[in-house]
Image (cartoon, rainbow over all chains, first blue to last red; front, side, top):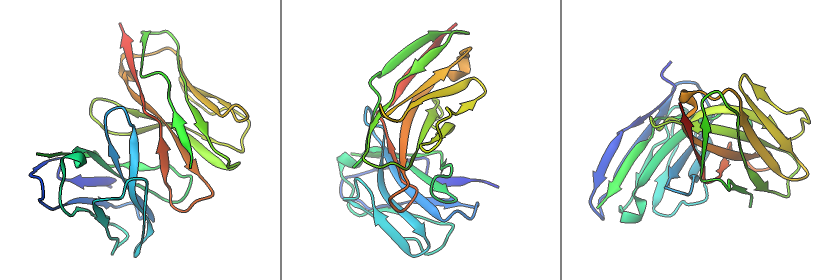
Length: 112
Length: 116
């Protein structure tokens, strides 16, 4: 049981490049979320999903796309990277509302 | 929208002593969950304790306990017998039960240092 896995752990992009951050969980959780962590601001919700085929925007969705074709996977796509997207990105999953969210190890992204 | 505020960016405590981290939140909802997460230098987010708003009894987990004051919208974390391994960033988080998805709203965090 690997829990929540994220790849890559580190990434450097140039402005304008696109990429996909991968997230997978093997706990059969319906709920999955993406957060970004910036110094002094805690974690902020980017997008979330309540099940396969269902996604919605969080607090800071601009510049990011998501899809949920399977229960296990919830990739986050950066369409055209900007320096403001330099951050640490966390994926999380939970069984249902109110249950513990399990976090992945995070991806540190730098956009130059 | 809900907000969570942690007014102490940094705290320090002597090993074996007790420390309290503060958290306040703003909501118009009556049903919700509150959480404390710990983030050590490894960056991994670890759940410390959870409190359901409908429960009057304060949650406890070994050396960790909360003081939940619903009317005051306050949710402080007490760490007793502090250990070196408790040094980390601590985040308070709010989870609404009236919106879809298991979305958390986080405070800004409190960096806890434990001095030997």
